[in-house]
Image (cartoon, rainbow, N blue to C red; front, side):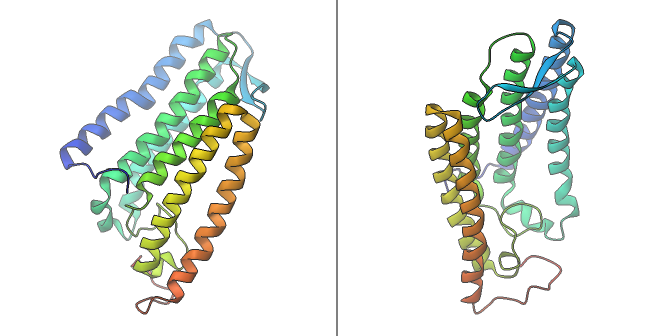
Length: 232
């Protein structure tokens, strides 16, 4: 409800450019930093933003591999989906979700590389606000997702009622945006406050979407029994 769908031409260009400018650049940054990195680099940070886990310089390639795996997996999943025909109606939103997630990983990786090279980085001050922005962007397109088996709020009731699917995704999208704004603002004040806000908001949104989808399904005269093989 916040973003317009893209044309097929824009989607193809977005797929290509985001692939090159995300996972490829992550690997390039790791290859550049690897010869300069010490034998021991930070690989994990606590809720206070300080490193609490360490590893060898080879760990610089872990997040690029994860980003590439996410990109490849999300490109392949629609081929397995019995409801694959529905993807054509939200291709732009699906592409934005993929790009946003990989861009988030790229941001985290960039600061991780800086920390590996000896720069002082409080990762909590980066990840908390960045996660808030991630939630805002995902929430902005969640209402455009159409029934499928892999993306969105998939409960027994959203998968067997178009009304439950549509209303749940719109409501959950607004909740995502609200959680993202709170996490962003709280994270700018304190990383701990940001992560607490994120945890409480994510758990609350999950519970809400579960209960709300059942409520809408129960009042939908066109609902189906949750035993079909394809989403409605």
